[in-house]
Image (cartoon, rainbow over all chains, first blue to last red; front, side, top):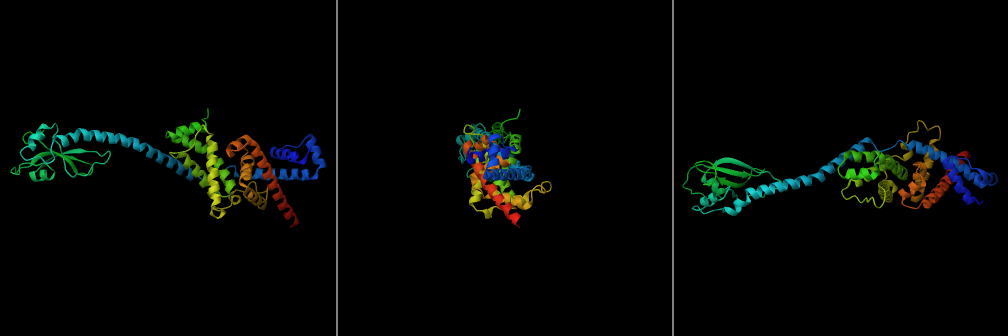
Length: 196
Length: 183
């Protein structure tokens, strides 16, 4: 039995806290270097056990744990947000398609004084897009404000009416979340509803 | 029945906060201690363990369960981070030495502070592969198969590294004891 293979067995015995047996035990009695190594291995195992016991209960602080869990939740919200935003954007696009796009195509932005009212009348909702209005953000909500506007105000919004009309005209203004008008519709002068 | 790491990981990826917390509770302490023994600094160990979980929760996590266990992946990440930190230089590893961070109240009488500090220093001076074998097999009590999986090397390599590492440690501690006896 050579010393090198014995050392491997001695290391395993020391790690398992077991006594060498049989031929190994006999070898230890006869070989001083192996006996020295055996004693050194036993001592080392005892010291490493103490290091292990001391470190056994150590871990990161609870604050680090909480910070990580908060970070996890934050990231989940960020991951989930685009799905929600896409849904909202789709709804907004649908709203725009229904509310704005037909008016852009059916009604001229700056119709001639004599024909604009007739053209608007032909349109189902009569909204006219306000020229140079800032574009809507993705998912931006729109609202309709019922108000009265004079011909000059209507002209500034791109609706050309007979300037001889010196009256306040009932109008519906489609506003973005920033309060800026995106489209305008002049309600029926008499009934206050529909085109004119 | 307890869920596997991989099951918890899949739930975590679906946004399950509890699965993430369970995975953290299960794996963080050992990862922390592994880094603590490898680096010898508690703040650095905390940083390593934290970073492993940050990488785990990343959208583009490169863990693939067909290529190995989640635990093995986590130790791989920790090992790479430790290498980076050590490459930056020992001076950049801040905090108290590991032996000062331990509580000596109960165990103080079993081993003197000087011997313990010398052992910690000797472990830190071992080559990376040897130190990792000592940390996993002797300090974390992993069997050879588990250590081989975590170290991504054959069982025989783990065994031989451990035996050589212990030889170096035993020789160093023996010299220290001899000096102490002379004094």
